[in-house]
Picture: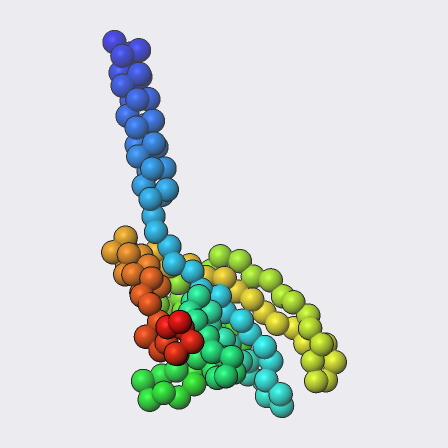
Amino acid sequence: MKNVLFIAIMALCISFSAYSQEEKLTENFIYCELVGTGKMMSTKVNVQVDFGQKTSYWKGGSEKFLKDENGKKIEFNSMVDAMNYFGAQGWEFVQAYVVTVPGMSGQQNVYHWLLKKSVSKEVIQKIEAELEKPNDKKTSKDDD
C-alpha cells in the first residue's frame, strides 16, 4: 500500500513538473535594447530604445528616443532610471554589456541593456502582421 501511494505521489510530481516546463517553453517574449551614452556637460544620459523598428538615416536616429504625450524627448538621469521606467511597464532585465568607443573627449562608454517582456500570442501575431505590411511610402523606383 505504501509503495502504491509513493508511486502515485511521484507520478503526480513528475506530471506537474513536465506541465510547468511545457508552459515555460510556450511563453512568448518581445525584446528591446536600451543604448545609453553620456551627455556632454551633463550628468544625464542619452538613452535610445531599439524595439527592432525601422529607422531613417536622415532623421539621425531621433525616432529611437522615447517621447512623452507632448512629443518631448524623455530624459533619464542614468541607465538605472531608464530601467526603472521600463520595469514599471513590465519589462525584465536580461543582459548588459559595455562597449568603449572613441569620443570627442577621449574614450566613451556605450551601455547596452537587453530587456524582455512576456506577451500573449495575439500580440506577437499583431507585431508580425505589422512587419509584413508593405511600405506605404514607395518611390517611383520601387514600382519598377
